Length: 313
Ligand SMILES: [Zn+2]
Image (cartoon, rainbow, N blue to C red; front, side, top):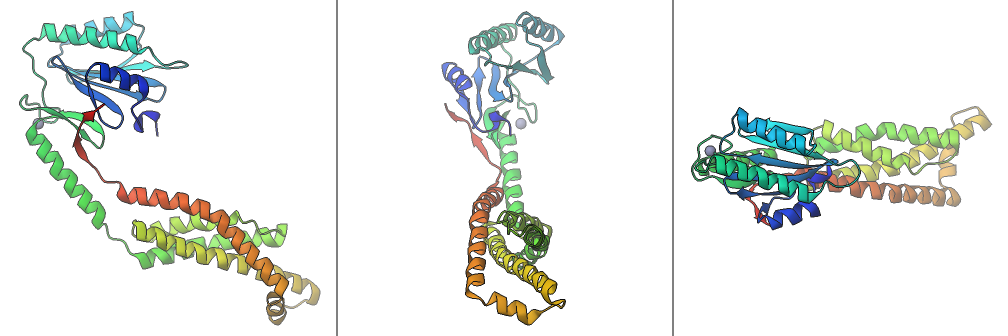
């Protein structure tokens, strides 16, 4: 995620306010004279997008000269628009310089095309355009295109919610995929003689992959299903690792696979309490990771598209 995706940073926010612009989550946007202006932060850069009623080759040449005189090396053309990139290597780019350049360009276009009107960015017609944020990216669209976009988003959200998915299959997937995690626990215990609680994280990671591979439904309930599978696997993994360890020990002593001996050992109070401590430890380690993953999953579930008007800065 680039930093600009998450918020409106102070420099852009302040200048946006000064210019009377509005905002989406991460852009300052608005109409100045007859130009549509967008500003936001990116990764090591500030970005200014300017959309104008008309732009011919002379206008482009004018913009290029302005950029060169300001030592700005990066820009991209859009249809009747330009994206100007202010690279920030060490310190932030001067907001005053951005403001000066913006005002200069807006004045240039508004005096060259005084009767020029901005067009809908979807269909190109000039009437009744307004700025909307579609999934937080602003666009200037007409009322027809707005209605169309709204319907499309509603349908997409509905489809997203209705995606087929099954909790039982997801649960099985989580259990099956977590089995290699048990092998890891066994190896750690038998060879290093320590039951790394960290291997618990592996069960969950594998469990989540398994849940998704088996088309478990992504939802808060699905997250709980994964937690339950994880709890079972962490417990089972610890007990199995212990059993294998003691079977190996018994085999070294007696030369046979001595199941009765194993049950005898597992029933000893000190072994039982050791087992409990290890399972508990695994739960503690995995709880943190669980919380993190649940949060991701609920976010994924909530990830609905939205169309909304811009708001005040
Ligand atoms: Zn339109």
